[in-house]
Length: 337
Image 1: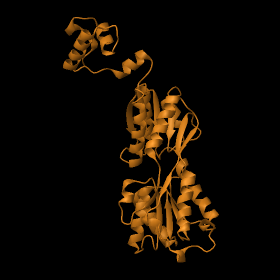
Image 2: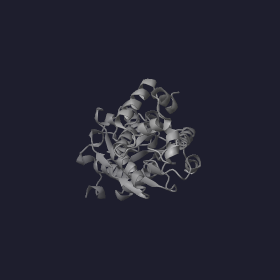
Image 3: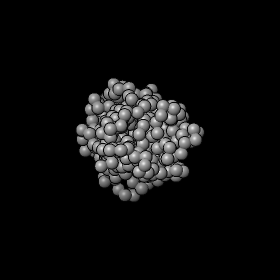
Image 4: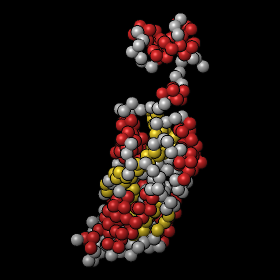
């Protein structure tokens, strides 16, 4: 590995001169700085970021930990965070956990060892509580949680209005005349999914409908298909799904039973994944605004903020839940007033 001393020897200057030149110090002449930068490039010099951070006592790197980078939601959160952090002079180091607790702990320890300036995190489903966070990261590195959060951890939290969004989605299904509305509820150890479940329940109560079936641990296409078959067999004529991929599985389940969508079976998902508008029929979904969530998380880090920031959802009504057939609607339904 090429060192500052190697560059200094090649140019016949002191290592301190090379160090100042590479850091952009005004004490170094322009011609010397250019010569140092050219020699560093020719020799393949790479700056030791960790050592530099230790000398400065601070870092210009912010870690972002997400469950899955390839999901549209998380990639947009990262994009929103980067738009704020890069403008403030920070670089972003991204880690993904593949929903595994052990991978989340490893990522936290790696970021801690690299002396990052802060960590933005959305927890893996395998994380049941936040105890491992402070154990792995320590208390001296600023922490901002987004989307999937643990309320008892310190630091800022950026969340969607999960209760209100699920309430609006379920109420919409009731207004379309669906009478037996179940839910694909996601993982109950997540506060986000738990809030969506409560929003679904409250909407059914307010609309005078009986509580339908709850299918937990459904977030992927395969489990959505299995739960969708069970819901249909239980008499459900509609589902609110806490995720779009499980909702897609439920659509496939309804088709496998010969049901028409939305005439016989309605569905609303969550996340507004790209495929929801491309399906036939297109799928209604709650848009989460992940880019703004990423911006808010980065801004909370820069401000050293605490407390909770809420990013609103928006219900995108499409064909999968739009019956608009008055003969199917519930008589005296308060949701229709």
